[in-house]
Image: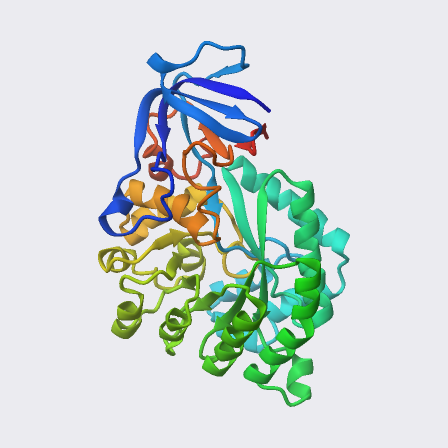
Length: 413
């Protein structure tokens, strides 16, 4: 679709061509242009500027008077494709059960894996389609989607094929990640596997098919004291070297066991969660190219600490925001709400939150050249707001969808 947006009240998220990410004080500047226009040609941003320079041509136009335009959100950590829901565990937590206690009793990830095992690819796609349509309405244009609820080769590949099928039918951009180490299933324990040997088994069994069918762009593991320890992380690092798939690692959600330091040393693209941080972990991230992805809605839902956003920003770290959308610890994917939580609970400014949810999220998926900011040549993944006072209002007023229209790849949704 070719289209010209005119009379834009505020065009936000304009970053110089070639900007990879923002860190430190630069994260606090969300560049804007008042009374602007923007043109879309063949699904790309082809031009933008002040209305005084708006070209007079025959492109169809859309009047955005009293509306703001910004890049679509990039959610760089989600588990969108899963089977069923787990609201019964929500009730157990309210009665005092911890996340770890529910998992030990066969709930949590194991509960979701049981539901995946009895679901077909088509059923998984059908459920996820409904969720994805809601996310697009709330402004998400790109999202990473992890496997991890299969827990055996057959079902992990099933999940990855469902993610691929969903991506093929949607105007949103889905980026698949093979979450090889998420929880240790009963069958693996019965065969005498531990967390490390299971991780190696899953990588050895799945990666040839993953690479042959192009099913994943990243590798991941849940590195935690009670899940997968540093030996398992080493297997992921080794697989990264042989497969060429970059690492995105769950780490420091409940305990600090040295996973951040090891992941940063190995050149992981991102470390995600970071609710529990030691001085050593913070020093490892200081000035590094490994992106710190924070997931405030998970902290909200589980009642655990929030990631130390201010410390990370002040230590020259690259900070991204994402939803962790999943059925157990973050059953919602609203990036507007994530931005609000980042401000109210982690003391980020609205500009920092919006940058972390767009350009830095794109960097956490190796998509900086295509997504996350207003620049000529980038994908026309854009949001037109409702008639709200300012872009900061997106982070200020929570509980309401402030997006009027999502445009993905130049197509109005």
